Amino acid sequence: MPKTSKRTANTPSSPIRRLVPFAEAAKKKGTEVFHLNIGQPDIETPKIGVKALQEADLGVIAYSHSAGTASYRNKLVEFYSRYAIDINSEEMIVTNGGSEALLFAILACTDAGDEIIVPEPFYANYNGFAKSLDVNIVPITAHIETGFALPPIDAFEAKISAKTKAILICNPSNPTGYMYSVEELEQLKSIVQRHDLYLIADEVYRDFCYEGQQHTSILAIDGMEEYAVMIDSISKRYSACGARLGLVVSKNKAMMAEAMKLAQARLSPSTLAQILGEGLIDTPRSYFEEVTKEYDLRRKTVINRLQAMEGVVCPNPLGAFYTFVQFPVDNSDKFCQWLLEEFSHNGKTVMMAPGTGFYDTEGLGRQEARIAYVLNTNALNEAMDCLEAALKVYPGVVKKQTKAINV
Image 1 (cartoon, one colour):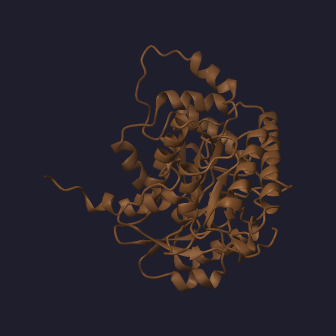
Image 2: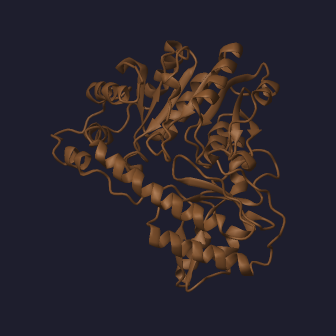
Image 3: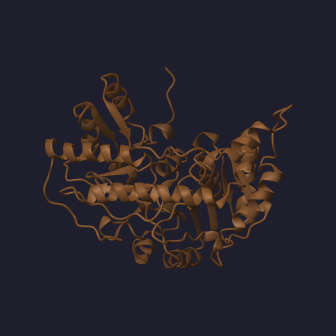
């Protein structure tokens, strides 16, 4: 029998979707499952984008330019100017989702055996993408006690080697909801300039900021022209995950020329998705104000409930729509599976993403889980009822817990 590749054998499974079979089995038994494991918004996609797609003249659905249609890229130039990001249409490549944008960035910035430094916990697929390309993730641990703030700069300095090619961050963070300050971004700027590294920033959650916080893009920071690579996507911004439309942006012409080779090899991004995406740019600002207000209500609902539970440690996330929680349990993988296999409260249970899959360091995340507050507040309150009841009967409850700073 032919053997499969070592690359895929070394690629970790998604912690976000690994428990799906157990959720399906629970549903077959008649248990209602609250899906807090995945960042799939339930917010309606703006009709203005859907209308643009419906009204498009589609006599032939043709390939677009490999970098994306000129009309969409030109419109994106105006869109990003709203965020103090000054780019032109030649400094971006439209991709089939943010995942492809990230793959292009990693491939264009690294060779097999190279290293990318990433603060952990991080979006689990960063590890999957890197390992499938034979690139090594070098983690630097952020801690729940500080709300998962940027680790000390000397920790980054200690990890830099001859193989280091980039630092990768998510801002605001998936999975923690932490948002990096301008001061923290300036610290990263000093490191990448000093060591001639790329700073790859996944900024797909830029529009979801709370408590008066404002997002700053790495492309808006002076002196980052040759170092910054931005990843973006319409998935979360417009609740259009299924459209699979992303973007990689950089002013580094050499890096973008290499990424263009990859774009040409896969021919083009989806023409239909680009029509949708171009239409979505005309979404009124009021849409984001209403959506952010709704997510903030959900955030407060979940955070207040979790912080009131005995033994639970939950920082106060200021961006995205996730929180990374420490539970008083022996093993979060077992706990999350137990919730689906053996537990129900009033015929209902909760699905979360176990924390171990968001770390590269062995042994970390064993008491943590990611919660996506993407359901309405009534559903979230019921889900929190389930969690509170579960912690009273779970056989692996432990007492001693860390206390987080409420940041």
